[in-house]
Image 1 (spheres, rainbow, N blue to C red):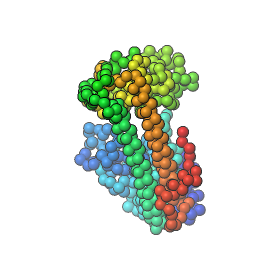
Image 2 (cartoon, rainbow, N blue to C red):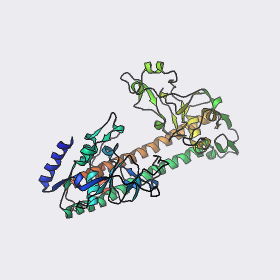
Image 3 (cartoon, rainbow, N blue to C red):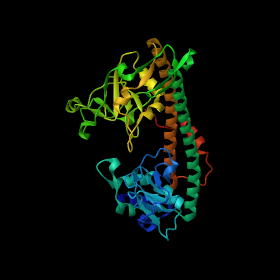
Image 4 (spheres, rainbow, N blue to C red):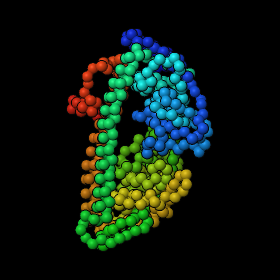
Length: 448
């Protein structure tokens, strides 16, 4: 909804609650103060708001070498990622520091008279996210740009001061409960992944066989293997080695597309069976580097944020230029070398070279040596690990469903509270217990 339509909705809500409204531009004023470059770097997370950049290990946005143009942020300032406001990158800061010059920073006015914590939740509610989307423009969603003039005309719901504080207190408690539940589920997923990695390494090194082992090292493999196993170079094990390319955007997701196109971000330990990116037969003919690799091919990401990530094709597909593909395995079941490299992945990453963007070139990958058991043992290993992976994947999938449900409930709760749809003074079950009730009653969306 555009600004006028949105403001009419807010005005109606306020009248129904006997609340007031105030334009955002009377509550915050745009600021362009520069830091001196020595302050801590800040970032915006959709789930966490404004936080120190170095407090998270999953923030891969690289800061500029020159911080002289970074903007100063004080506690209580409103920070907006203008390209991702509609996704939730809007928050009142609890920290001081500097942030990218690409963001909008607003200082609270002296006469704001509004509770900062309430404003934080209000501006991050579903009602307002939809509005940010309606006043953002651009060709693609990830390139949308928030209109600052329309943003500043946005009306803010303004309950009485005491009620603002009550809403903020209620949401502080409820969201903390939900966040703790999400953290527990995330740790559970990490434990599943760690256990799976240990299991793969144990089986691939033959430690569970109880036979005599010998040490092997070099070309990314460091460990012990049974005496009757061989160490063989990957280039000898596969008939073909190749890669791919990135077609023009018009050739991806085309109306007549039938052939999957896989990027390195889609590589998964369980294989790649589904991708929404498709190319047509015509695109394959158009791009000589866009080869169709057969099912059972092994894939390795050669550079970028996903370097060293592995995948296994369940269906014939094309790939982008960041992926090296080994196809037509000649020594047994095609899943075996995939598991062998999963076991050696931490060593595989040591082969990377380069400065700003480390890479593992095809020559290094061709020279990799992995342990090769007799074919019947490879079959037993693949059967055992596939079952373990299926079980682990199902447990992780169930945990992710609970995380998604918790996030949905938190978002709905925030919107309901800041718009006066729930009584924040009532006694409620802890969020985690309420979530369990929701699951038991089937009040959740099924995820594919």
